[in-house]
Image 1 (cartoon, rainbow, N blue to C red):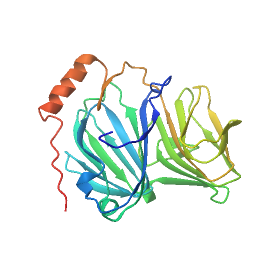
Image 2 (spheres, one colour):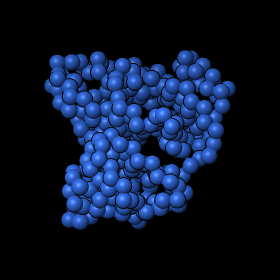
Image 3 (cartoon, rainbow, N blue to C red):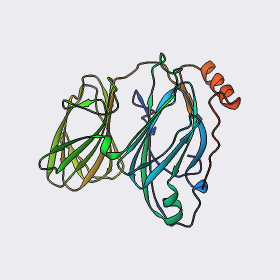
Image 4 (spheres, rainbow, N blue to C red):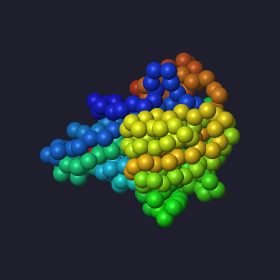
Length: 274
């Protein structure tokens, strides 16, 4: 992606998407320093028709966009952007990471927007770690940072009626149960660890677990320190036509998006670096 090598958990062979989730990218790198920020990360590019959401696990991420936003979100935080009718943005490791080095780790996933909202005005929501809703269980051996929706009776800071997005961090010999809404599409991406999910052993890092829509209770037991991302959402059941950074409902809309991006209707982003 933009010259950056990432682990792609979805789409993959046999799993093009899991409505409403379209893509999951995991980028972990050890920067050695002595670089300029303008030479790392992904430069300005447009989006339309969905929400690209980025979770920062290590390091810090600098978001700039054509709406005038420029924010650096630290480890544990989230950058939630609704692209709507069009926005141009860039995503780069923070200047300190480029110049001084350090471990940088993020996941970006794409959430489709319903046809009725694809051409609404774009918005950007930066959230630091302390703005997420923390659920602790078993003397903090299970930590759930809820980002969006309602999980086990607790609601996150991003108000989404049809989504549940959360990070899970579990110590060895801990367990938890997640209650998911009926008929939701549900995925768990395990960054690293060793877990048992509904009786199934998951031992490989970067594993994607796909649940049947009838699975309303998810039981997780951790055998060692484990990190997971929970994605659960109500399927839109709409036609999806995508082309690069655009996700729409038919080919005509894709051609219009390309034209609008080329003519500057999705905004112009000129990055400024110190």
